[in-house]
Length: 175
Image 1 (cartoon, rainbow, N blue to C red):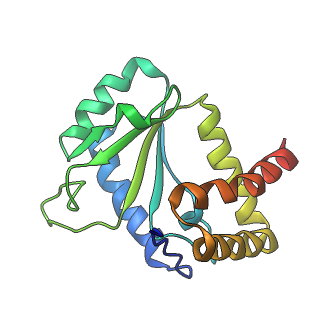
Image 2 (spheres, rainbow, N blue to C red):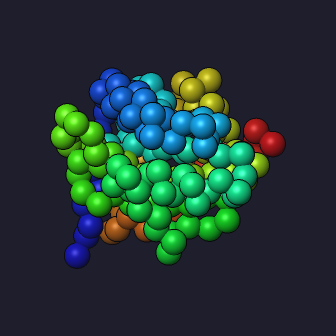
Image 3 (cartoon, one colour):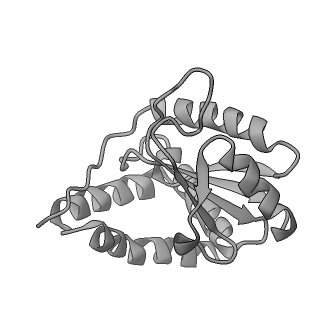
């Protein structure tokens, strides 16, 4: 059975939602992190995307990672060890209200990662984002590829695999 993959036209609410999340998360982890980066397709104005925010929290090194885990837990995030690897630690949400706040907001879907500042994955995320932001024609081409893959792919794994050559090619040009 085909797994449905939804690609939407760029929505200005994505940036707004990220900014609200960034502020809330920063208030929780302040003093333990270096920055919070909006990466992935929703961070590129005009780019069609799955409506999922990709967020990288940048830390100095793994020394303060346990402290960040504890702080994120207080607002409903949990460390997903099975989806993590060195340099990029994945976090899930306990429910749709995460990060929890007094307003009880139902947030859009998000992929949250904690990366050390020297992480290769962080470098790739930021480099690819910045390249697409600077090259509208490439962003449009990437959006078309994603729409085609969403129509033709049987599942999320094949959709992601279909993007790999494009991303690898761009990262090769950057390096």
